[in-house]
Image 1 (cartoon, each protein chain N blue to C red):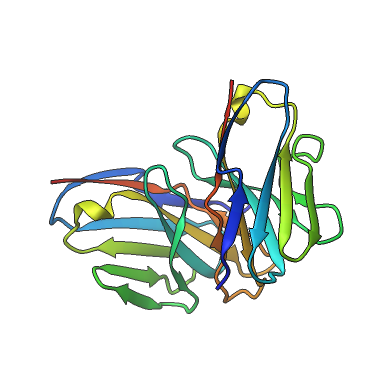
Image 2: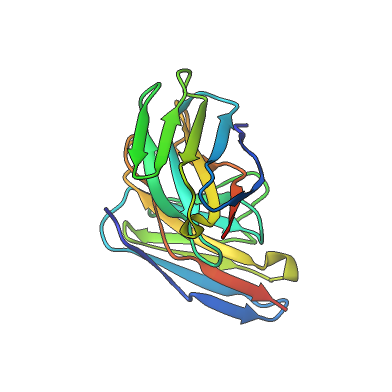
Length: 115
Length: 112
C-alpha cells in the first residue's frame, strides 16, 4: 500500500492569488491524480499528473488555471491560479500502480477557502 | 463520457436499521471501489470488487458487483452511529484511459 501526504492541509487565501499544493507518496506509483471536491459534492477528476511531461486534463479544467508538475514518481504539485471564491474546495491527490486490479490511495486533502 | 450515479442521495435511518446504497455506471467497469468519507474527512478506501457477480463482506458491510459489471451495491446491516458519512463508489472503465470516476455519493445519517 501507499501512504500519501499533502501540504498544506488547509489554507485561506485572497482572491486573485495562487496556491501550490504538494503531494508526496511514500513509494513509487505509476499513476497520480488530482481531484476536487466542492462542498457537499462528489469528487471530480481534475487531471492525471504525468511524470516529466504535461498533465492530462479533464474536460472543464485547463493548464493555465491548474498547472500541475510531476518531476518524479513520488511527488506532484497542483497550483490553483488566480483564485476566486468558486475555487473554494477540497483538493485531493491520489496514487496507484495503474494495474486495473490494484487499489488507488488518497491523500488527506487540502481544504482551500478563497475570500 | 462515463457517468456513475448513486441512489439514494440521502438516507436517514434509525440506529439498528439496515441501509443500502446502489451504484450504476453507464459503461462496463473493470473494477469498482467503495469509499467512506466522514464529515470533514477524506475518502477512505473500503473495498474493491473485480469479478462479475462478486460479493464481499466486511463485518456488517456487504458489497456486491453486478453480473454485467455495470452496477454495485453496499449494504450495511444494523447500522450504528459510527456508520455516519458519505459513501462513494468509484468505477474504472473496462477499457480506455485509466481513471476512476466517482459516483454521486450517498450521505447516511444514523439517528440514535
